[in-house]
Length: 240
Image (cartoon, rainbow, N blue to C red):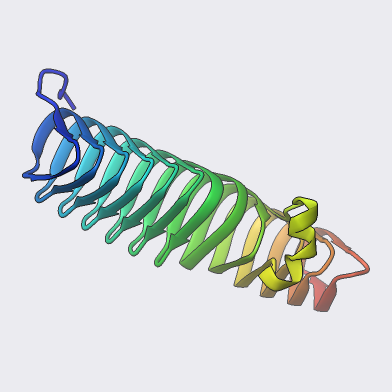
């Protein structure tokens, strides 16, 4: 990106600036950037607003970040809350807070330890972690390994290896679990190796399919292997 020889943009307290090209950008108070921003490093430690697009090598949101455009970055870490009005394109996405994307997401690797909401499609080579996930369109993954906690949803899920498990939380979490409705709901899951718990789906298609406890599935189609837990409900299973 060649931004090392550029100056830095730092907003402490309350302030606003136009965008442009910078080396480092830090929003430490209530900061606003009015146009597109291109930088090596971006940090939002307070309440930050970017009215344009962001291109960076590494970005971090530790407070509350609102982005009116698209984010393109090698790495994005969200420890607070990030609201993205358009799309998110990053190689590595680490979430320990909340990310809400009104457009689509395309990543190589997603590490989820919080909440991810994608209004359209989500495409990733790997998606691993726990807690909550919502995808309004297709969740397309090479490998998904998720421990869900609370309500989760994806319109459709496709991939090579898909594992959905119930998060084994604390004693307090177990006591309040009925109020949180820990369950993944989807129309279709299609993959090679599929292992499910706490899942409601209309159709599941796979080569090796293992249906664990508390699943409610209308139809399961498999080509080689099928297992159903005694506490799972499957309307119809057939080898194809």
